[in-house]
Length: 141
Image (spheres, rainbow, N blue to C red):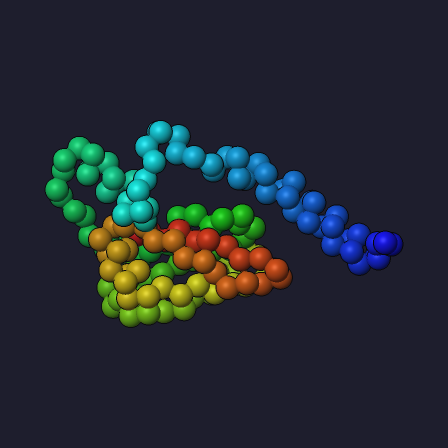
């Protein structure tokens, strides 16, 4: 079977993308503290996990703007959520264009805002653009 030029270019692009992604994947794999998070803890902020571990019951409230804590495989995208949106808690869709030459959208639900107001992080997946999407971790401040 003969490979077409298009198939060869697609294979090279996939290979190059894999090479680009490997350092990012290996740098983010696992939990350096050795503490594996259960399903309930996955979205909790580091501060909240620390308070839980120390037995502290003081729960800070989000009074600042929310922002992207991390965007997977980021290449210039940004997310900013106003403190007014956090306080209102109504579902909203945001563009995460930033400095990138294209944009994605993410939607924060009322349940997401409830977690953000409680200083927990939430993870959401962006829309697809140019054959890729991003996992965005959003937290207060």
